[in-house]
Length: 157
Image 1 (cartoon, rainbow, N blue to C red):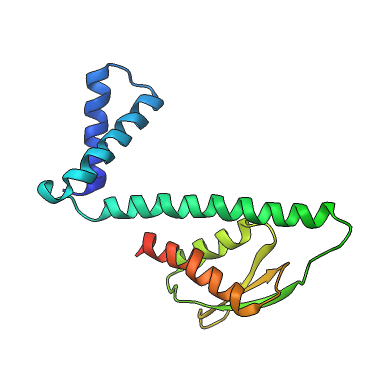
Image 2 (tube, rainbow, N blue to C red):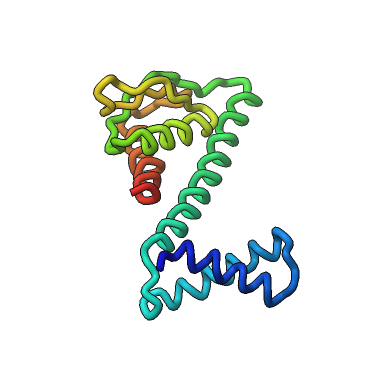
């Protein structure tokens, strides 16, 4: 049985045991079920979707961290008299191949302040982005590939 079905079933059992069918209680049941299944996955034969859920939370945490850093960088540049911008269009070689992988990566890049996804090459091997702070192209490419792209592929593959 898949991990997602186990979590859904145990969450409903939790709601039944507590007698409270609120969204918060259902979420608490899902969290408790995930915690229990995390430690019992070998003995219960739970399948890898539990790892995907964990990786999705990791991607979410990484996104929040990048949003904070990028927002602070842009805000600092706005409030100081000196501008540190070095805008450029950069091509990011893609390991992502499916529409879902490329779209998710492009969306996450566009959500981050100071960057914007522009286009994907016809052969779907390069994502073109505009970035406000490109002092080192290779560093930018490396940060997107090792940051967002790697985490997106871990969740979606």
